[in-house]
Length: 161
Image (tube, rainbow, N blue to C red; front, top):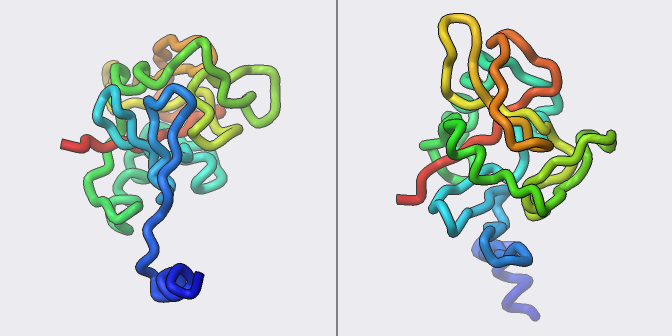
């Protein structure tokens, strides 16, 4: 017990990892989640839960730059996900929570933080004025104005390899 306390106080204690029920996702204990199926690491919280406000597409890019500058989870290569990467998180059979306690279910693993956004931006643009993302109550791609902030966030991702 004294050794554990000494390690904790010295900052040398390692975070304890936990796993999703299906063993696909690993909570790394540092506000990140590893997807063993895709070899991607995700922020456990989306940008809304992390910062407390909705973001448009331009702000989502700035959010990624900021977390890279600060070295979130001791990593400096975070990115905006692609639509394909985002859709790998959607699982209709799973319900994480409702959007901010409302009626729309978020269908991602419950290992991710609860009550965030159900609409996440991707890096993919559709012309000069729109960008794509994914809605996590349906798993469908959306196409919205890059200036839209209505209940939108971003979930940063990075490749493990």
